[in-house]
Length: 298
Image (tube, rainbow, N blue to C red; front, side, top):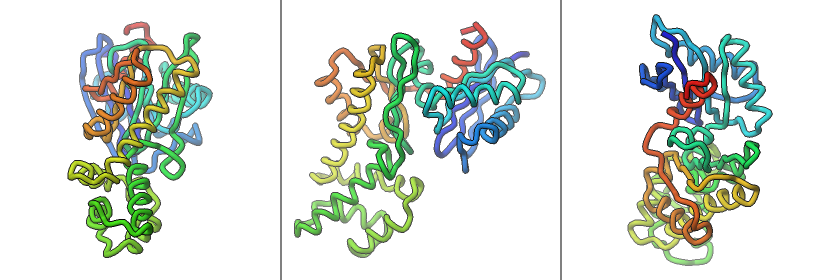
């Protein structure tokens, strides 16, 4: 049986879905992303073909790949990686940024895909089909609304309040407890000494818990994170993004209602024609859709 293979390659995991050409699911596999890099293209293509091929059950033949990959942040990069995958895999392939899986996964032909999880980025297309990107600049420079960025901004806010002689309203103590730090200088060392998403990101729930417990500082950090995500949408629409739905996914925006509600409120004020939809299926479903479309079957 010929199958379509979809993949969602993110910062922490690789989700692979194998489906019949009519879309019927056949197999689902999740593997750690490890040291995934979208460049150099040849090495990335070798890993993708190996990972995806290994997920296909015996007796099935791959007809096409549909891949959403973190780090593919230009249309040219995606095209080069798709060509490399086609050469190695011997079948048609589509490669997009991982955020571009969200709209097809939601069953839509057009809209804005917005990820807020390990990182954050917005992806859409204009009326001519040109792919548009906003954000995705990494946890040190940006990635507003992502788990590492929320911890970064929360730490800055808590330490700034400490420097100003303000009392702890719950955010500082939440961060100290999460990082196992005895005092503000120790907290700064914990964050500075490991400037990695895997070190910062797990602290995000502590920020949300502090906000829910009444910390005004934590609530401000979350509200500003929602504002950062709204800015990505505004930047895309200003450049001609088409569609009336913002499809959001990622561990933070999906599992933290305070962030999703803040984004929804901001979009209602700034872009009342847009509807925010939290993706209720795995983004990898969009990879299967893209593979089937490549074959003319979807």
